[in-house]
Image (cartoon, rainbow, N blue to C red; front, side, top):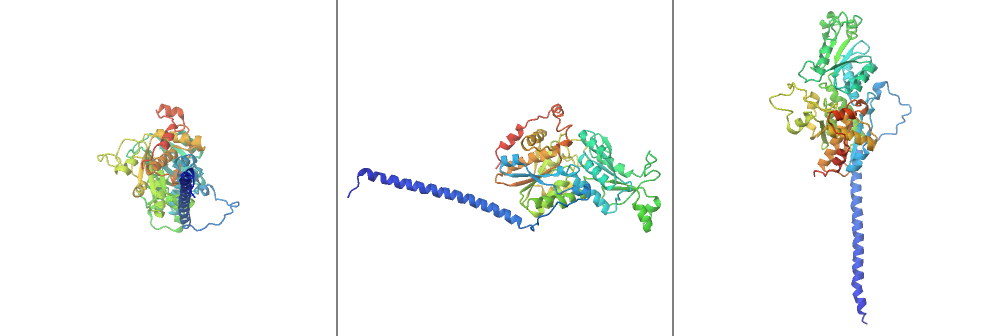
Length: 470
């Protein structure tokens, strides 16, 4: 029996539709399988990272009490920056250092420097001793906070162009504040050099006869570091004799001392982060971290945290965030900070000209030198970019941050774009302090307008929308 012609013509059509239907099903299955495989691989990666940590029991924290203000320092949370993470397809996490009691990451450094000095017998609390430091503000506030808690006095010397609210905070904490003009490190009147000299002269007769050092001449006490300066007001007889009786040792220890902390060169700065910030980040991320981003002033945060994280994960990417006018970007990218004719440490011109405070410098510190071997790249951030980021974060995340934090987050975007990341890679950075320390400059629109620094959140939108380099 022969089928009608029109039936014969329809048969290939049905067969073709069947094949198309099967093809769609197979394609859909393959797509779902690929997605499942990718999810499985990512989950497996997380589980491998988790295996490096011992399971922690549930902790009942209702009866947990820390001992004084120093017990509040550290163990700051990691916060996901939602707006930037969602826009980039990665995870940008900020270490909320502004939650330290002194309001910044420098609390860690100040505490470690003072406790290390106490452990070495260089400082003794409640003896009328005074801590001296040269700083642009945050370290001074941290030192003044911890000094009060531990029974010391503090003298902070700082440039006269820093935000006024930092000075007010220091005075409220009972610190003695001396403001000087910005100058190169080779200038004797530069704020760090003056702090060192004030510590050396601590034992000299002050004008006030009620001062605990009145009637004494200061004596230098040998230290393991050439930068840290310690003087004592102890009598010549106690200082000059190598052997002292137990009574004389106690008397010697209880005499007022002047201590120059020297955050720029003091190795305690580095160890505060190598032993504290780095392990905290590693634990909080369960080792799932692809990059670490930080600016550098003294270099301690970048060196200590970066070195620790790199010791746990060799392929971790470490990036420097550097503001305008700083020489560290050139040092990382090109090996020199400026012309050979002007050897490092001899320039006589104060060059760092930026609204960003706390990071950026034009000399190499011992702490930053420790970071050089582990820095993989450096990124320059303009004042306009930092200002734009700060305003963007308030509008989109409700985060009110300072200038160095904004600088770090701009660098996170630039790093992600350069690496071509968009598959959930994790970048951790430091949120150094809040915007409350920057009202008079960085968060003052009138000041920015006079300084010809634009206030344009569109800068961040354009950075986020820019194509990746790879």
